[in-house]
Length: 228
Image (cartoon, rainbow, N blue to C red; front, side, top):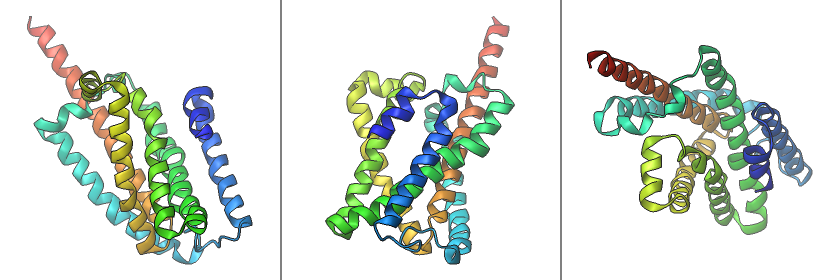
């Protein structure tokens, strides 16, 4: 929780990537010192290839679902974030190729699908350890969700109707509910690469869809102004 507050509230944006990677690395080393093996953590080189293949298949399916949701008029508005209307090509490339794959997907999967299930599983039992890790994964997303309610129109509408705190809680519960999907990819492939690649594909597709929908909205607004 301290790590969450530090990276989302105290550190400048440029420090997010090294801070998250350092935390994931430190957590991995602590787990190793506690007796966890590379295989238990999903970091064995022997299963990396299989993990990559599983992640690409799962990530492709997730990305396709996002594209469909962004194309469907009933759900398209949830992707329209005004913050995406002034993003440069360089910033978009940084997000898609560096920040999302490394600071989000790799960091979260190493911590929440690699380290925590093993460490908490030894302390609480395997099933309780998995549930605790999923709960922490949900809590990890509370602060980003509160930030999202300030920009995304759909999230802002939900926050206005429910209140920001209940909206953030609902997002945390939904995120926690998604944890078993990534955990299943980890178990099936015995590699943290599978959930990492799938997670990155899902988030990249969502971010790119947001940019495209925001660009479409901007062009439509210009057309309306030009027609007046």
